[in-house]
Amino acid sequence: MMSRLSLLCLVLLSLFAVQAIAIPVKKLNNFRSRHHSLAEAVLGSKSTGASPHTLNLSTIISTSGPLDSMSSKFLSSAPTRRGKKLKRDTQPIPSSKYVAAHHMIGNTYPYTLQDWLDDIALAHSSGIDGFALNIGRDEWQPDRVSDAFDAASQFGLDFKLFLSLDMTSMPCETAADAQTLRNLVLKFISRSNYMQVNCQSLVSTFSGESCTFGHKSASDGWSSEFVDHSDLQGKIRFVPSFFIDPSSFGSFNDVMDGDFNWNSGWPIQVTADFVRNLISDAPVKNALSLLATTSFNKIVSAVDLSLSSVKKALGQIIGSPDSDVQHVHSLAALSRNIASRDGASKPTYMAAVSPWFFTHYGADSYDKNFIYLSDQHLYSKRWESLIATRDQVDIVQILTWNDYGESHYIGPIKGAQPNSQAWVDGMDHIGWLDLTSYYAAAFKTGSFPSIEKDKIFMWSRTHPTHATAPDPVGQPTNFELVGHSHFSCRQPADCLICSLKMPFGR
Image (cartoon, rainbow, N blue to C red; front, side, top):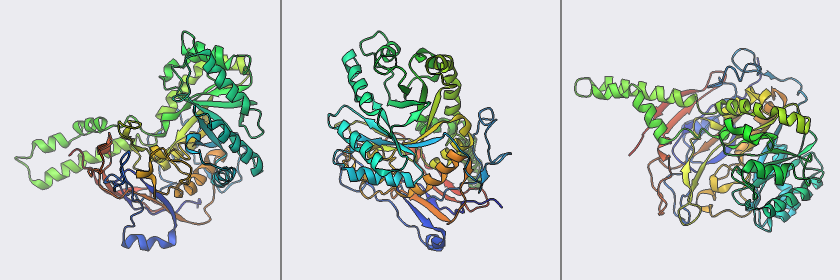
């Protein structure tokens, strides 16, 4: 019998902030008898009161259940659990696949060299090969990046770092702005632990699709002042996260050596309106039209059928590789220029995986207050999607190691938070690292590691969907997406939903 991750899960969905832990399976009976509240979070840009929208999601992740919503074309050459299966318990296959975690330098102001050594050691032990260092305009940030490289060198193992230029922070209107970026890149790409792809130093971005550096277009600006500038020409592998329609990649064919698909980490198309439309198209309308003439039990059955169809539709989206398919297909527009410019055989594709997304800033601060749907085992399903399509994916970037403001951190809570203490303090996510190690090994080698010790992975919210925080910010956009659900799965059976309740709207 194939080795497997033996999991039994109890999932109660209700909140937005989340705590994650890993528990040995022997303790299972304790969790059958009582529900442990694993998260106590607070919402509000400045609030200190308990939040009604904290998430109590206890989950046991299935790692050998079926993959949902796979594109048959995209999976044609990839091993899946439908038909040809991924190998387990075999020797690792040499691979150039990498797993990196996005590290926000802006949250590291008080970091010491020891902080970096601790982060690197923890990440490395969790199957992470390196950090993408998100750097912004603060004058102190290059010093923290230098500390990170010093720590990686002292660490002694092959832990890599590369720059992710945060172009929502960096100015990019003039040629002088481009010079600042070039100087920053040149400062670090010669370091021994800088990540290399095709013998070039990997450089990425967050945004930047509108940067012109004094030229008529963003494409001209990035080409003339950055990628093809004599300072950097031939030295870097530029894989930006430009938030553009993939069909327009061709307009950046003199700039992009690949693509980092940031938004592939979440089903961002699933909004409250999206689900309302699903419901309006489901059989529930017919059920409600029978309200005056049909028995209550028949109406309930019809509504249950409707909600089941909605759940099935969402299940096909969560963790889906559809966005990857689109981006990889569109990268073909870059292939010819990359071959002539860099001698590389194909563009680099970097996909994202993320366990969560919740942010709650008011208009008086960052003015962002919304969630992305992260329930129904998003982290597990997304990883399995990437493993199944690994032939098409060069690098997986985990979002994130320490972005506390958006709640998707998998590293320890340390450094300087961006006024996110209200929904971060006490919300330990370290439990996600063990889960990361398992999936990262499978992605990099093509083989799931053997299970030496069974564990339960759980994360939870602590407040109901419609509760309100004691602050002026208000409920986050798309809060209605979060229902109250109870999942339970045991291997070798597939993950099944034992009960599902989807309160929607007020």
